[in-house]
Length: 319
Ligand code: UDP
Ligand code: MN
Image (cartoon, rainbow, N blue to C red; front, side, top):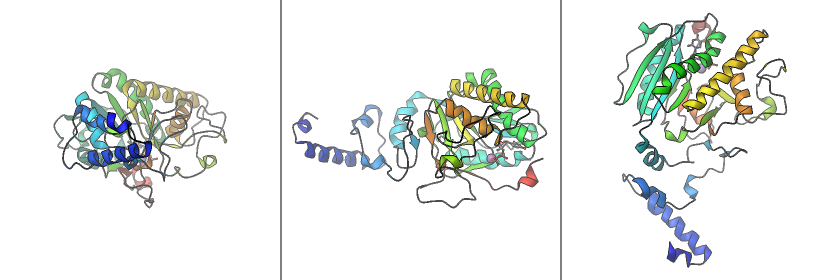
């Protein structure tokens, strides 16, 4: 380092670039502890210029090509974290559990401790999936509300209660996911953050005025036309347990406020989630790689689809 600083500026850059190649060139060699921190402070190999990778409030937006999994694992593995996943399978949605868990076992937080919490009204029909060591699945029995909107919205309340009663003792981070989804590519610790939101695949490249926020000022989820940052998906959010607790509590409260006024927000809990993330900015954003929609063709900026919807016949599965 000392010799490097003696060099003219342009040569320093050249040398630090070759360092990058040295360290990135290894094959099968896992960086240990401090070794990873020998990397130069910036590296052109982990930069994307075709997509937004930082919000105006300086939260990273996670895209393939913006992070080094090996380096992240070397930092996170020693922490021995447990990551929780909540997913709801009420009524006919129990049919999605098998594919969801099987694909997660191959691709979600591989090598980490994971607890799945499957909330269902029908525990008997939940398939037993063979899990990797250090991973567990528990069934959380809950009642079935009669309308799909109510089922979907009540997730905020149920997750909040479950954190207070159970999962606060069991996990460090929690992701709250839709069940009608499948993992197709790795989802790792690059997604961990205090409070994490995912950009909705339908709205990552449209102007803010077209975001389907709740636009009636009588709703607690109201966001005026000229405001808002991103349109986030209701199917994926997460973060540190304490933060997810506060988040789900806040969303449940505004949902109840609307209910008391006889209002249902345009996109149910997704509208309330968007309002909460508008007033309390997420600390990390996931690109639509993490919540894709299989009916959409894959544009070039989406290099890989990690988690995507299963096509479903709404008439067939919603009561
Ligand atoms: N859900 C459920 N049973 C229902 C309706 C919804 O279990 O009858 C849960 C399920 O986890 C589902 C989530 O609520 O993934 C959100 O509903 P859905 O996926 O139908 O909404 P979409 O993603 O189509 O907007
Ligand atoms: Mn869904």
